[in-house]
Image (cartoon, rainbow, N blue to C red; front, side):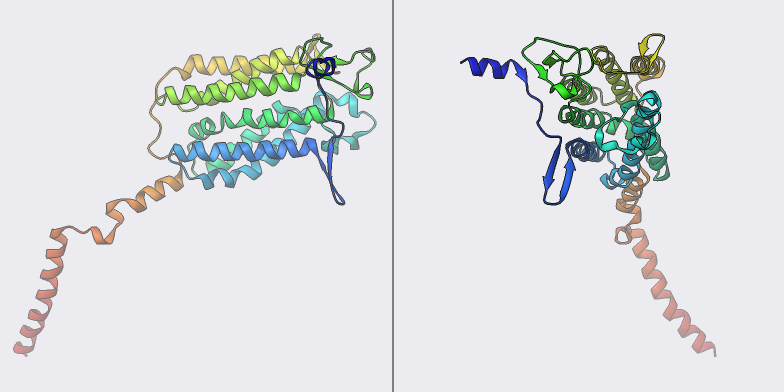
Length: 320
């Protein structure tokens, strides 16, 4: 009984952060990100198809958006925590060791996605709404990588769900503390709840102005990150004594609230076609594009023409 109580009184951390398959080594952090990306693409494709779009549109822009997102996330981490890399800048390339700033990844990834979507003739607000719940799902799965790396946890706690951290990963001043707040779990749970809320809201407000779901995601994520960030004890760059990610969260909340207040409450019908490919498919399926859909008048004209041509030829022969 005592062993059972001890087990459920805390969350153990994985003993390893990598998976060995023969000569290959797969970092758990990278695997979590990859699974999160695949889940996000699948969710977005399904939502895009429900809006009348072509799922192939999502697949075509996913690669560029994901790569840009990873670059942006790493740049954000290096810029905001530059002191960690001072004198050893090549360590900035070691992404597998952790260290991706989600705000930077969202900004560069979304901007790249918007650019690629515009080139394909996609309706941008509708596309952003399609991806809105997919992003927090990807983030929730990706946060598991922090669990494997035993990083970015919160302050000490004696709560039953306290996270066990090995001594080698405990920050200075906390060497004798065994359990900490599992902030990865808090943020993952918040993001999954946010994704569910966005989907439920979208289903109940089908005539909401396109782009509103994405604004709800930005504001909702900022709100969740705000309180989760306040629990963390890892070193971070501060502005006016406040962690930089808290400032970023406040900006996200303010931007989303401003958009929703000024434009988001208007009900604007969605476009008839959300992409150029959808419009082309609709045009190809329309009756006007079907050569077999000619009406009776057209058939009569064809008969008259065929009857007239022989008669004219015979008249010309007789006149000769």
